[in-house]
Image (tube, rainbow, N blue to C red; front, side, top):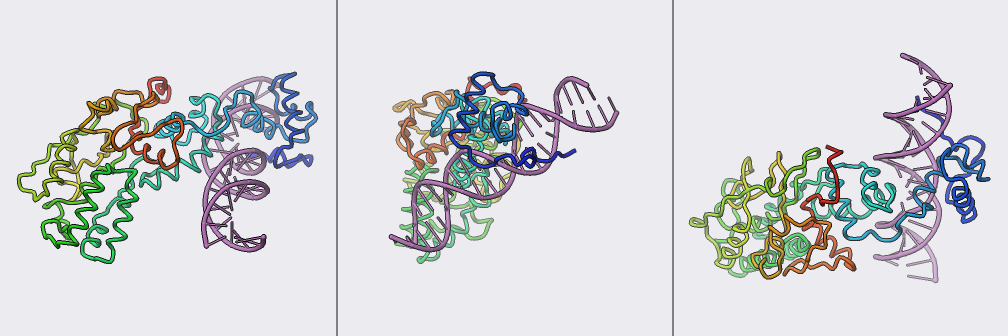
Length: 350
DNA sequence: AAAGTCTTCAACCGCCGGCGA
DNA sequence: CTCGCCGGCGGTTGAAGACTT
């Protein structure tokens, strides 16, 4: 049974609040507290509807509101909670002290959502938009068409935040070496059934894998980490550099590959599976030099993500206190592991 | 410098559920 | 059980500022 908008009647004021109105509202609430929003504006001498007063108070005037830019940890928490709760802004806000649902909603829509989209991640499902990640046609076109090599380089450059720079560099060099030497061993096969035979730059890019997080499904991220059969390279034609690099990477984690499409079904492909969470990380998090930087897979998987993660690995390094938007975007590929911090009790949403 | 475009975010709108009469 | 009030929520809007051409 719908109701007429409360502000339609009595010619109540709408729009931005003036400092005088703010002060009236603050003074009144400090003296009498808030409660009956219906009668509050009249008692406070405001030409506003109660709803407008409540909104102004809860979203702006409340003394415990934390203003200013969202911290890195807050942003991380928002993404994690959104993956579980969806657009339940009030529930998310309840776990971010000092932040309002409106603020979080705005921040999501103006920052995080766009960033996820740029990364090829569906902000609704938190799963990769594979339609955007099917790079085979782009790569094929690029390999066969010299004029598009510049565009390919731009694409690879744009993937930097997502992919290990070493692998990107490799993909780029492979690309250029093909054009320089016309080495047939690097040629991507255009037909689907041939795509998995040779070293495929797309496989190098297949690490652009972001978590599938099933709503209403929380489980042990380590246990749910898909396993991947170590690559059998005996029949593959690899450049030695690529082989070593990929071998090291593949051996760093395991992934269970089932129900994959043609190119995905190659032994290296580790795409997330639809029925369980897949925590696939930027290669920097699976760094085989993890003993040096204390940031290997295990440490990532076992460290509450809201803690001060040592982000000083070779390819991803964020000073969370003063990072740029781009750095956040870069780190986003890492932090999208959706591990729920211990401090967050989500059991009541299950 | 001016015009056009984009981004941000405070505020509004409509709907819903809880609750009391 | 129904009705009306109220608080709360999520989606949307639009003014203002920032940025680009």
